[in-house]
Length: 383
Length: 99
Image 1 (cartoon, each protein chain N blue to C red):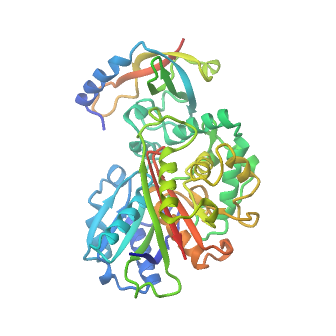
Image 2: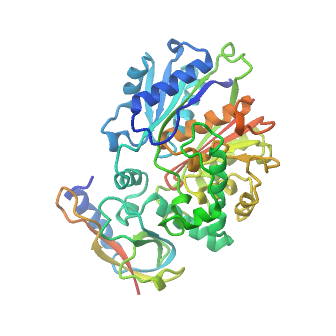
Image 3: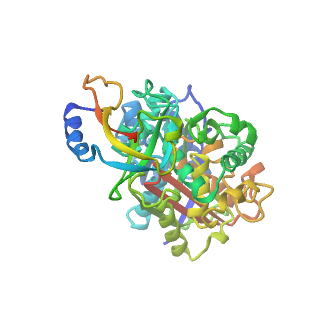
C-alpha cells in the first residue's frame, strides 16, 4: 500500500495573541483540505498532535474538541510525545491507513504557548523530562546545554559553531512568509545575546510560539493522481530513556540514530540521496547532533560543515537543511512542529516553496524529537 | 503538581543516594529558571556519575566557578528543592555539593 500526502498547510507561526487554538487548527485544516481539493466529509480520522493544552489551558480530550470545531464526523485522537507530538500524530495516522481501517485521514499539529508566562511554560515543558531533572531545577535549554558541553569537550565544537546554525536558519526563515522571525542575524549577535543556560545563549534557542499545521494522507490512488501528490515512504519512531542521566552517551541521541537507520533500511536509500531535510533544531546543538545521528556527517564533523554553508540555501551542493527556518527561525509551537516539517518538505518536493525552493528536490526527510531525545520520529518523503 | 504523598514516596527513593560521592560528567548554569526556582538562579545543573557507575541529574550547591569542571568530585546532600508550592509542603530532595 502507498501513502500519499494530498494536502498540506501551515499557519503563520509566532506570537499570535489575537488567535485562539480553535482558529489555528481551523485555518490549517481548511487550507490542507483546499490544497487536496477534498471535502471534509471524506476525512475518516483525525490525529491531533499537541503537548501542553492540559497543563497550560486546562483543556484535554482534544480529539473530540477539534473534531467538533472542524465539523468532522471522524474517529479522533490526541497524540502526545512532547515536542515530537506532531511527528507521532502523523506516524499514527500513517499506521491507521496502512492497517486498512481508514483510507483518508488528517494529522493536525497545534500549540498555543504565548498566552502564559515564560516561567510557567518552562515548567510545563519540563513535563517532558524526568522527575529527577525537574527536582534539579533543570530546563530544556539547560538539558541541551549539558549535551552541548559534552559535545564540545569530545569533538572541539565551539560556541561559534553553534551560532552558525542559528545564523543559517534565520537566513532561511527570512525567506519564509509563515516564519516567526524574518530578520537575518550574525554570529556576533548570537555570541552577544544573553546567556540562558551556559553555553547556550538566547539566539541559540528556538522561541515560544503559537501555530498549527495539517497534512492529509490517503491510500486512495484516485485522490493522488494529481501531479502534486507526494508519497510518505518511511515513518519510524524510536524511544530512549526519559532523562539524560540514564543515557550511555551525551554526544548523540540514540533514538534519532535508531529511527533514522530504520527509515533508511525500509526505503533502501542512503543519507546521500536526501535533497532536503527538516531536522529538530530546538537548540543549535540539536541540529549538529541530528546531522551526525541521522548519518549525514560522521560524529564531530557536522558543526564545521554547517559553519561552511554546506547545508545552506545558495551555498549547498547537495543537501539543504531546515529551509523553513527550522524551529529556531520559523518558530516552535511544540505540537505543530512535526507536522510543519512534513508540510515544508511537501512544498519543497512539489517545487512550490518560492524564494526558499531547493533545486531538484526529489527526496526529503523530517526529524522530530521529543524531550531531550527520549522520542525521535523520522519521515522520508518522495515525489 | 506536587502532593505530600508524592514527596513522602520520593524521599524514600532519595535516601539511598544521600552521602554518595561522584564526579561531574557535564553541566550547565541555568540562568532563566522555571517557576519556583527564581530565588536560586543562577545555579549549575550537572550530570554526576556516582561511584559504581549510576548517573544522576542534580543541582549543585555551595559552588564557585572553579567547581564547574569535568571530573570534579561532589557529594550528594539533602536540601530544599524549590519554593513551597500552593500545597504548603516544603519540598526537600537531593543536590550535589563539591568536595
